[in-house]
Image (cartoon, rainbow, N blue to C red; front, side, top):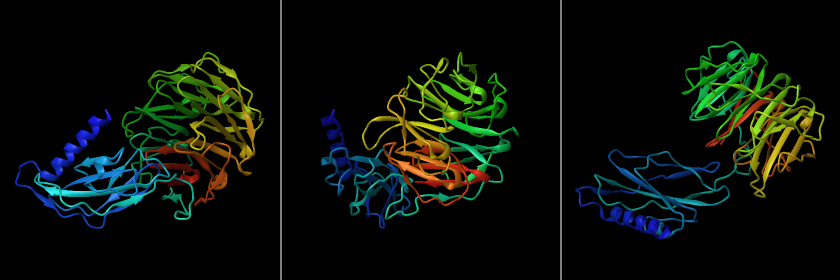
Length: 407
């Protein structure tokens, strides 16, 4: 297979140099090519000229050219590239180099630009070159925002039916949710869902038009999560409801608790963990039958997330809560109390390329392994209530419409 890919690349390179027998011409190398590193991505920009078709070549290498790119393992090319071009699927901490050339009317490729390089890095973590990794957007107040999700766009929801969407996490548009009840959480898997007080559940295929769905409960729903086949929403008095499609909802056969539940997460496709008041923790293999789990804390647990440690490669589940409470588990069954992360209540945690926990007074903490945490400079003192990882970074929302972005 690798030999075949190399052969195809070589053929493409040959066509690029020779042209296709057309009357087209080579184009001059674009000037002022720049590359900006992101979280697992790099954005390449250049001044485009009318009528010029551009080819972009890049690889995990200290340099690259239009003549040697086929010899670099794992190199990639993009025909008809346009500026800005976002290269995705990159490894943080590794250097990537880029070059491009152009042609007109299908002619041979022109000279390549000088190689430019960038090193992708974790979003949300301050570095010497990026001392302020979090950017505040214009407040979306006056309502508190309590949940945020990412699909093809961001969707943020909050008190009194507040709802907003954004393509980039910076510029937001108010949406009509059609309800005045508090919306506490949002999630995306093929469709968007928003859960809230009184058992409210809103459904949307496009993040524009929202339809209420009957969850069969009047208890407040505080959180919602999904894996590849199931949606699970949890809430007051141990309420747990599930759905395969977001339309038809079923109450769990046994939630194993009557305490309020504040957060839920899948761990792979075979385990669910929900957490709540007074250290409550319940687990389920199917979303229907739950059992109590010893969490080793009596403090409220507000957030839970699962991920693969970028430091050790180990699967880890992390729960956070009141007074900076932090507990971790490798399997969802055995939990270890860790040193608290500061004095503030942590309201939410997410795993994308690393664990990020947010909470009261603008608290933001990051960790690559779930146990060792670093406080990050925040641009707000407002309470932060929810966080989601997107393709290019993290979005956080909170009190009085506060919204932050790290990319």
